[in-house]
Image (cartoon, rainbow, N blue to C red):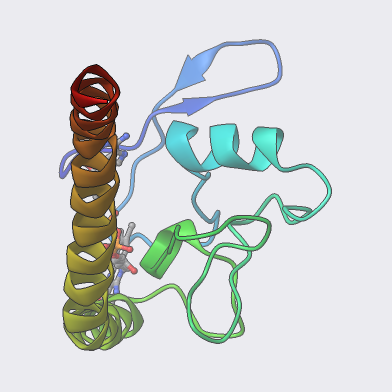
Length: 137
Ligand SMILES: Cc1cc2nc3c(=O)[nH]c(=O)nc-3n(C[C@H](O)[C@H](O)[C@H](O)COP(=O)(O)OP(=O)(O)OC[C@H]3O[C@@H](n4cnc5c(N)ncnc54)[C@H](O)[C@@H]3O)c2cc1C
């Protein structure tokens, strides 16, 4: 479809551009390849060809830590720019709220890793000390 013409292919694969003045689009849109691939990978949970299924918090059903918004999803809301924009704002606020927690978790796991490193680097020293002690005896 362009501003000048609509190109239609009939059942015989023949291209017929009909004349038109006003276009009312009522055919819907197909899911994008990325969404279709996700559906294929999660056949038990992603059962709606119209779009990705998410819960009320926009979390992709069947996954952990994947979110989907807008036209990529199949929800009770109309696939409009207003809905996509509102969902985008909502997710931004969720991520902003999660960020400090994520940072704290990361810092905690880093400090655990440091502790593990320290204790493993202390291991040879202990052995050395015990060797020294053994020698001293
Ligand atoms: C002809 C038409 C008229 C419309 N008129 C209106 C209207 O008047 N009012 C209204 O509210 N809504 C209207 N809509 C609907 C509106 O355009 C959509 O609901 C809205 O754009 C959805 O936003 P989105 O961010 O979910 O998806 P999109 O706007 O489609 O954005 C998705 C983006 O992801 C990108 N993308 C896709 N795959 C990948 C990938 N693998 N990697 C990286 N990027 C990728 C795409 O290139 C695209 O930029 C209209 C739609 C059409 C088709």
